[in-house]
Length: 249
Image 1 (spheres, rainbow, N blue to C red):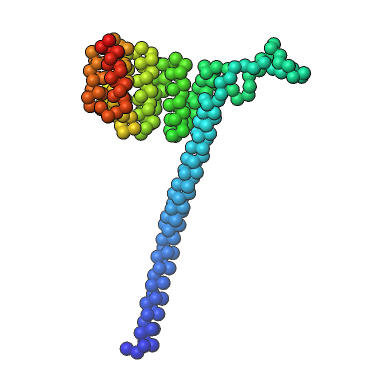
Image 2: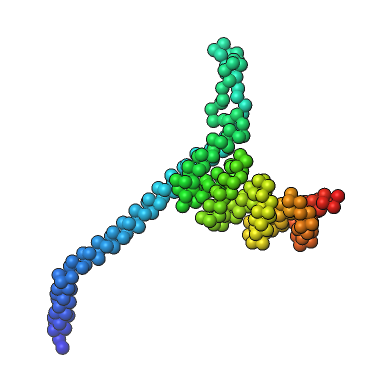
């Protein structure tokens, strides 16, 4: 076959392929347009979700930061105001801006801000962190039952270190509320499922403290002995020995 004839056949094949493609496009144009539109909509929705998610996270972090600024503010007694002559005026005390007269006043101011961040954005990391901090503040204010409820929410919704710290905070709240059996159960569960970031011997030491406060001295002694024997190289072993001496004494 001559070269010119081969080129002619190839040209015909190309023309035939283009023609068939045009016929398919004309026949399926509506389907093609709908498919492209669907792909565009899905992509736009994905971008929109990421943008919305980032916006939510930014707002949650902003509320958490606002609460933490209050939590970390300085505690300063009320200072007498100065009169125009430069002398102190004992009759008109003034609280310095950004400070609080007592630790309790500071906690009372921080608490609603933490709760607002937690309730506004409960599904975000910042919201869960805010709820954890709200529980810790409530412990500081002696509101142990409320603290336990918030810790339970963090335990249910959180994960990782924050969840573990919430379990520890809950146990401490129960102990300070003199709910000894509940605290013992919480510390025991923590010690049995100790993570790398929460040393088992440290949790056992807290469990022994709970036993001792509950008047269960034999259980406390056994737990302290376990620390000394099984974790002899741990710095907590020294403290366990000291506690053992107190029980024996």
